[in-house]
Amino acid sequence: METTGKPKEIIGHLMVLSTIIIYSFNTNFMKILMPSWIGPHGLVLLRCTMMAAGFWLISLFLPTKGQAKPTKKDILMMMLGGVLGIGGNLLLYINGLNMTGPVDAFVIRTTQPIIVIGLAVLLLHASFNWYKAIGIILGLAGTVYVSITPHAGAVKDSVTGDVLIFVSSVFNALYLILIKPYTQKFNSVIVMRWMSLAAMIITFPFGIHQVLNAPIFTSVAPTHIWLELGFTLVFSTMLAYFLSLKALVYITPFVESAYIYLLPITGAIVSIAIGLQKFSWHDPIALVLIVIGFILINKKTKKQVKELRVQS
Image (cartoon, rainbow, N blue to C red; front, side):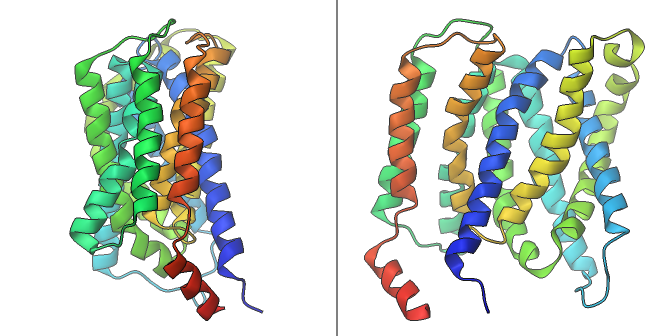
């Protein structure tokens, strides 16, 4: 018996939602780690090295019988995905985060669905409807509202940091579109193996000096610092990237990128909980706008409903 499209979509949604929760903690943890305990380039190299070592090790135990083998062109394209979506994305994002506040970083990231739509329409001639347009506008309105309202706490603003995070969103959007076909052809671990290798290679010259001289390795660090670094390396680097990639098997790059609208809310909750930001009553207003936006983004048109009924 074949699994219907609906349960498969639910799996994809749950995977992406899990990554959003992980990233909500991770961005705040990285803000604590940098630059006092490790520089941004060093942190990127640690993450890419952990990812490459982990997925190459896991791939050794995968069954090869009946599995499609990637060609040289496939490997090059997957490695390009690693340069864009992992290495380049992390270098830009983490350097930007080092200059700006965590909530600002969450807000800037919400431009990603718009970038994905624009690229998909330009490169893939993707379809579009008014429900998605209105949903994006409402979601963006909610996140902009969070950004422009005054907030207290350990949050600063930097134009350079915001620009770097925006460019990282462009890299990530290109990656989502580029890598989608390969998630259909090959095992997700194999795709991650080649992507993470490319990411480690490209970040090595940037980060090796900061890794060797990082205070976390050259001095005595508190236990919570080691736990936060461990969370970043294992959960955010290994698990979240794998879930994000695997979700593309079940949902489109647009739907996955649209979940970024949750970050300003979930991320702010974590920031408040660990003392990086104080609570503001503006956040629930933004949450309402974002939730309504999500409902509209995922609403199917009458034409789509008819097509699903015919397929079933």
